[in-house]
Length: 87
Image 1 (cartoon, rainbow, N blue to C red):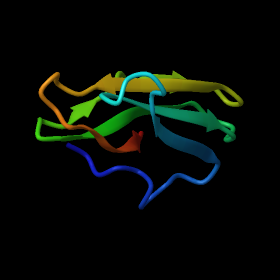
Image 2 (tube, rainbow, N blue to C red):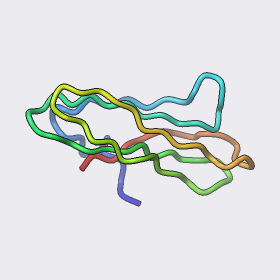
Image 3 (cartoon, rainbow, N blue to C red):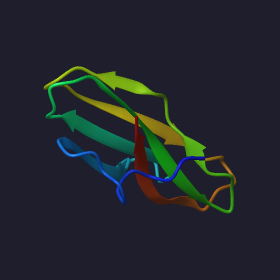
């Protein structure tokens, strides 16, 4: 799995990660592309007591916002953290 992009965030792409209000197993990352080029990102969800999961790849045109998400296994202790990978 690629390292989450927070450590090496691309300038101009603003992202945030959170856990769904009604489902502690559902992690979501939302990004806004403030650059002048297309970027692609996906959520990287750390799951307690279960394998980590990655969300779907999402392509953002300049100025666009969208979200990527993933759900931890039912036997997980829930989302431990939500990060993202940017291409």
